[in-house]
Image (tube, rainbow, N blue to C red; front, side, top):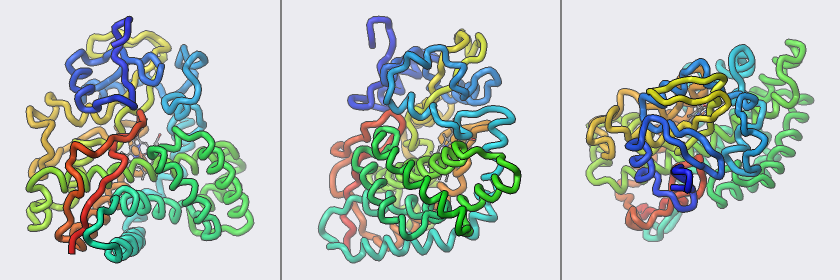
Length: 403
Ligand code: HEM
């Protein structure tokens, strides 16, 4: 708590689920300070749902009255400053999102499945060649490279640039898993993507960058240069770090919560249940910036004044006993959630949700099939959480792969 009775959300010291329990108990919307920013926090499932669909709560930065005095350089402020669909509303939002929806339909993704399986099999072969009695960090060796390689393929990163891209993203992963925490790396990625866009103009391929460039040129500039860049960068970041957390968290839950993995192995529960239960129980996103009130609004009896921000607390909504019952803190594959908010809701619902689900399902089933004796290398209490406001995962996930 601060002097003015605000909860402080500090990624360096937080106890995520404990903090969230306290916030949910304190009220439907609670004043918090996150990375120095004063905001309301929406932590209960029903309140978060109301916030994500409220017509007067906007993702557009211009409605935030304190935007100029917010501390610079923090994740919470940086992520709101780009010109991607994430920060647009209404017609503008539809214009930026529409060109991409076709790439993420279940039909297009079905075609992508063999490629995801192939990339997964390559990683499993590499794991199989490692000494079976030495700890292997599954975040680094498995959860991290798979989504990186899938999204690089989809976007159309040419082979010649893969190595540089991997260097950049590896460095990002080492500092905690978020590009938003690493402005220098983000700038380097910016330069690299700019180069790739220029190359695709000269030699088009069958990928998202080419789709977006062609659309732009055919339609007389429907996406500006800056928008094109912001879109690709958003896909790269959103399509990568969050899925790393999902796969890591699922492996952690399956290995550390007794009896669960057995249910998958004997076919009592499908792998999709493990993915959905992980999304609810250990949401890959802890706190995700913010909506701004366009006018005074009342949500669950709390008055939010025009210009004030509201922070979406996805991990907390997944543990809300009012939604999921007294067992909300249990990871239970026999009772996967009918619904959760971990991919958001409403107009900004995660574009990549079907892709993330597919990647996680393919990854988990391949891993647990290939290594029937896989076991944790350290107790759950020794796993250290990521030091970032947005992400919810552990920095490492050491396992013993077994014979
Ligand atoms: C939006 C979560 C994976 C692309 C969102 C939002 C959430 C989310 C909560 C909504 C933000 C809001 O309401 O303001 C996740 C999680 C993922 C994941 C938990 C993995 C487990 C992906 C992937 C891609 C992707 C794989 C793309 C390849 C996007 C995009 C948006 C978005 C483009 C913005 C949509 C819009 O503003 O209209 N994601 N995401 N995400 N996500 Fe994901």
